[in-house]
Image 1 (cartoon, rainbow over the protein chains, first blue to last red):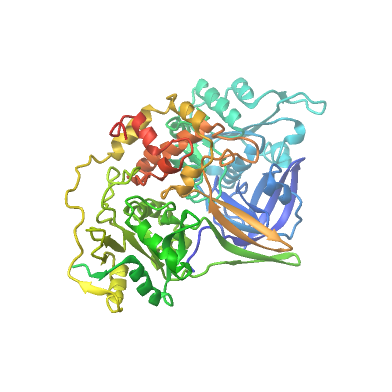
Image 2: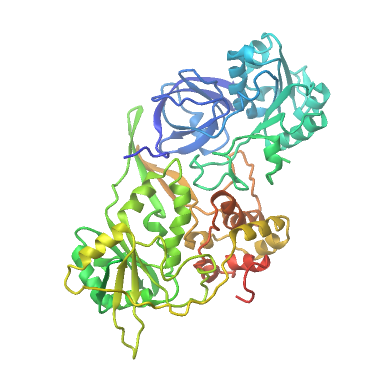
Length: 272
Length: 355
């Protein structure tokens, strides 16, 4: 039997990290190397429950893959109940990737909302692994409440202690245990007004956030070649055949999930 | 030179073909309980054999397209079993058996050109590919146009479809009597089978098959590029809302369509054992694109209808070249509220009016 793209390989969950009340990072060791690039996705399956696609939140060249997953549906509900040592099916990697080669030598501005920080983390960590290739790093990240923030040790400890890495964290609504910025991510972005010169902005978050972030970036003077998004769509096959993740003639699973703003503008989408 | 064999009637042909049932699964269209379906030859009762002939000689396609022989409506592909903490899974791949399918129409067999473009491009869908290689299609040629047919407008040659393995040609009936049934080999595997058939009693090798379509109607073929461009202007049109008010969202258009290929993947399990299967899905259903988090990029029926017709008449052309339609007319015939591809073609003014 030739390799069938729908057939997974075995993977084992070697570690589970609780990120927030409804997000856990599953560190999975696949039986065969998946060899992903930053921004790519993979299908995880729990046999008997189903399959779903997730972005890979770890950088390349590790002997594991991280999936930071929010409990939000049938497969993720059960995923959140499993323990370390559990076996999963995994197939991928799918999709294109962040243009990590093209953006060498640039300052990188990451803008994330909620679980949207997960795919960005693969590139943030990649940039840190290859620190000399990139200029200043800045992260603007927001979630609904302080309890919803993910990757706490990264955003509060690891990343702020890196040289030339500015981390700005916001929450949407006031909270007694929060003395940082309160407000939506696009609003925070506008106030921080990062300089577009020699900078590439990379964003991911809820569709409505992406829409306003794209608008704000343009207002700040970023042109459409300086803005990159990664999108989330429902997918079943992951290889451009099952037909549900299309954005016009493009399939998000194959032609995306990463798009330059320039490309997105030519597509009739929710985002711009 | 194509090899041709002749037989005096359809029932006789089917009787002879029964000799091959040790080597091939043979499927025929048959009318059972007043509806058309495909059944294995050995399951067709004597008194139903006549209905096979009736369906074959109709100038319109049978109710179901033949795509399910390569892309079944439901197909198990993994089996798994829980073994304490471990789950063992295996690929459930029944090496497809050599199969002969009689009775698809030229439009049906040409629809594989579209599905091939999707399933045989990298990464290759091996389940489809294996069946594609193992299946021989005997296409029954139409002598004139059926009530909903538009195959020629879509570029299908109804007398000599490119992708058929064997053509089944019924000579013109005179005085209520047919001169015979001719089978003409087209592809390599089709021709091999014809050579074998020629050795069977009841089938005789002849020099040529009758040329039935003498006066070829001059039909203006649709230009995929022009339709694609006209669709662009329709993106923000009200017609999608108008169609959505009529559409029931039943999905019948997609299930009967020979070029639709969307599928779903699901698991079924019970007591630690189970299967993963894929099954036909429909872009007309509201949960088709609905995500677990609640976001739905195509939340309204109008969004979904627009996407379906754009896929067929614009997106597919951009990606693959041809229109994703072969003019079989099944959507026109089966839609409960009378929406078909032609409905949209008329709206964009790209089709003979009044059809």
